[in-house]
Length: 136
Image (tube, rainbow, N blue to C red; front, side, top):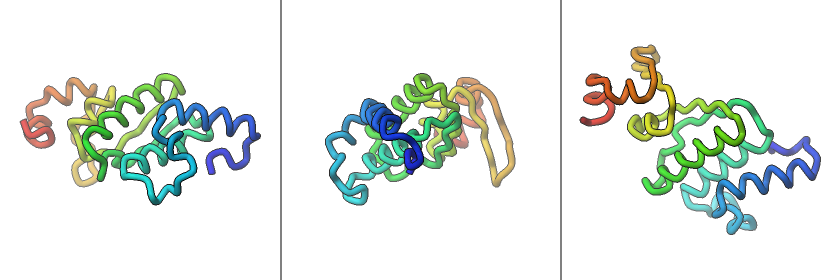
């Protein structure tokens, strides 16, 4: 749907860009989305969101239900996409360790209230964050 109102050339260029980020999707291009693995479905959801060439990308729990190896790959791709597409990424994630690895800044919310904010490295080194969210 992200390319619905765009020219065929624009859509073709964006699809090729998505396939460059997620080569596994090229192999599964003729397959129904519901028959893809959890990780492939997450890649497809990210690819669809990239179609309109937005400036801000919102992700809610991209690691949920995805194998750890795929989660790491999604993190690498998000960093690459953000850089190449000049895209801001807002990530809501329960997996605090992974989120702090992916993000440059972080916010800690507790019951909907902001309790801490700062650079990811600063949050990762905070003893309260380490014990409450990182299990260290």
